Length: 113
Image (cartoon, rainbow, N blue to C red):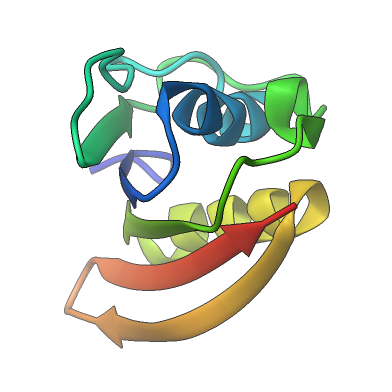
């Protein structure tokens, strides 16, 4: 697993909210390998494979969210830290806890505008 490989799971909000969250992460991780669906799904997912580096800017992340979005980021400790930092810059983020394994970490955040 590369230091920037990251899986993001989002619940709450709509497809535009999911795009705003992914846009905030693109500034750090580059474009995702898999984007959230535009359907009426209750849970959306995006994956960043670490192939491209981001620009360091927030992308679409400064767009207000329609409602709170719960997000789980999973990857290496470095990737999870970078994702948490990027999301905290773009949104009001409340840390809901973390779990650490041998080589991966998972963190849950609630994002609001």
